[in-house]
Image (cartoon, rainbow, N blue to C red; front, side):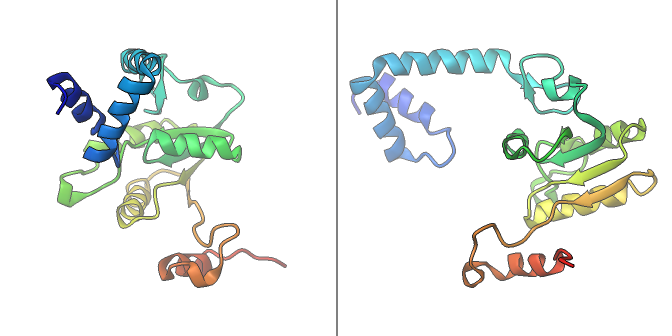
Length: 198
């Protein structure tokens, strides 16, 4: 519209999730007209992040080192492993402060229709990691989607030969949620995974 470079910036911003052409255009205009210094800082931060942040060689979460801080920590429980789909899931669990074990990031979920099988999300590597013997319990924290459930089920079947306890995170009604607004699948999971009170 204004110039080829402006159009290039708008197209670059559209790679972000949920950013359509209008949103990208608004962001580009804001940076060029009102916050050039912030735009330069953003460009620098993006360059630094893409240059130095990569996958941990052990858990496949994100780190600037070969092995992430969680994997090398001696204060984390080596016997407890939480399997998640993405580094965002690690961040969410860490922010809750409820878990003191270690992680394994699959990098996705099984989706045969999209050509994503066990090899594409590193399940053979995970099974090899579990076979080394230090892990006693695996918490399956894949998403509560059909694909996430299928991935958890596949992992249970694929690890039957190992003497490891496999557990699944509870799913159900969110804290503060009202039953009339909760979908039927979530309610079904809540009833199925009910806790003993007495």
